[in-house]
Image (cartoon, rainbow, N blue to C red; front, side, top):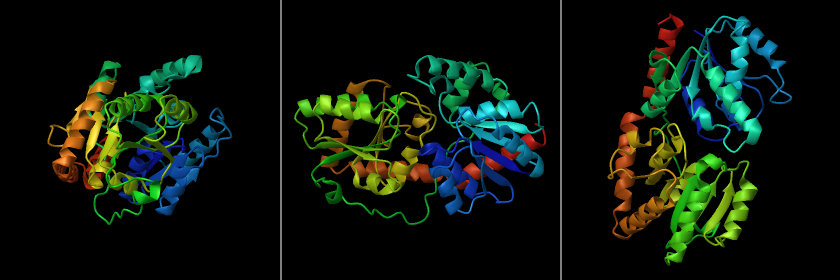
Length: 370
């Protein structure tokens, strides 16, 4: 069996980490990572000794790479093409008309919202994205909620497999950054958001919550933002407008996310849409409890209040209440118990071995025609 994983290559967040973790579990003779452009994903994959092929698009509209991918599929006798993201899906749609292989895609995000706030171009890309989905053979959904969403889009439930994301929990994870190094005190209540600076991630909602807490006199609350993205300037201007420069710090892209999670009191996920956010598992690994909006498969992991907080999507008030409860738990010495319970469940139910077994077993079924 030979599987080509096809992805744009510009990813820096959860989908990058998910793919590298997954491919590390495979025999290197059975998988190839194909990227359209050089980026953090391809560089990190090579560092781990994974087989990477760079197709070298001159732009996202450069269709000349189709010939290169087609040649690779034939020469390497690829049985399965496993795509990640709209660009990979679109190019595979054209390849499928020329070469014989089974086509799988992992749905990492709500395809109807991938181009949110993209104007007319965004609407066109969304329409095209949804059209291409109907041509894919099989789907990996990273939560039951995402499987239900795909069925609502008119896709056959028998072709959708729920396979949860995972991360490694073994090994040594050291906190290499201290609060003092980034201008924080031990008395500060530190909240961290690890997310692309993109409208779907809900940063402005988090800003509203921090502003309200400031109004209520909680001046020890600090918000760290890890990540970069297309609305960075817009968000920085919003922070200035709300006069929150003392409370909110932009730290940009950080390779060592673990250290920042470990020094924080709580991880905040404010997204309007997610599949199964890996950063929640990364928070559990760092012994950091989580406040999250009710997106994707979050409730599959944070299934009750012993494990963290799940708040309604788009409601800053619910987020504010959860932060205040977390602050009270810290004061009472109860906050770390939530982190401990979350970590135990994550280790038991979201192991890399389980991800590999589920993925490999499904590949075999698909290869031999279900």
